[in-house]
Length: 154
Image 1 (cartoon, rainbow, N blue to C red):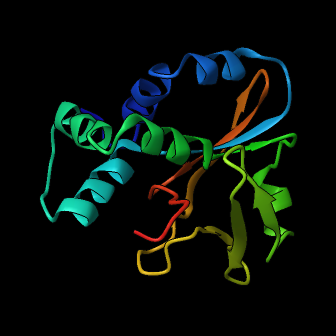
Image 2 (image 1 turned 60 degrees about the vertical axis):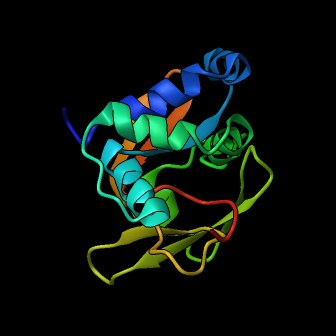
């Protein structure tokens, strides 16, 4: 019922044993976690329909197909680095290579209050911004984002 948590991305990840194993392995990862509301926005952008129930949002995302969902999920993970918010604010224009092998560009906006926007491969939809930073985990760091990163132009 909380649109700002991570139920949908968690359920999606649990559908892939190799991603669950990778998330359990020691190492350095930076994850960009779309909130449930971010997935709701994606469904509206793709279908034109507003969906509120998380189960229906998850079903709509799953209907894209397992291969597509996995490509999108792995596009949210940067292996080999723990990138903090403070580091990101000093990395305007940096390109991050994702687990999916695609690129995300860091765009730092604002002078005194810096905002991090992540530029993905879809030029038509608004790009995600970090809304909660520096969520620590044993093998990395995560940042909540308000939209889903897309590895292709939809």
